[in-house]
Length: 197
Image (cartoon, one colour):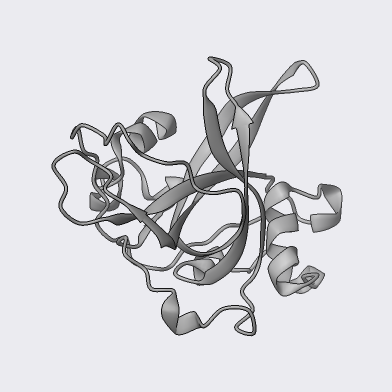
């Protein structure tokens, strides 16, 4: 699947400030959220059914405007909680060849894509859009509890006033095809630049 991204890159910086030790996990359940970042990190090594695989990955960054916290000890303004969800995708001439997680996500929002729209769908149109995002808690390998996104569904204004959901974070978008010597790459968070490299 082709993943063109035409929206301009906005500032998003890495910080070394000390995190607030009293940060609370994003509550479990369904919440209104805004997709503020789309970062294509290119091909990554992974594992599927015990075998090594290489797949294309893209990260979606969601913020939760209704759940704000003081993120760093020196901050004076609360900012919304944020979670990331990874999608894998394949680039093929026919979407019938492989149903990727990314394609399943897009069709969950817009409905089934006709074959003639499959290769031309511009994923950047999802940026800055509102969704309902389902969050669950899970235990990490070190025993700590973390939050993760388990589902994303279209925003329904019947359940939430869209004017009450306002974005705080700067928009962020990057495609691996832009390369490493661009301003948009330099503005990515440090951990993203390392993942891409």
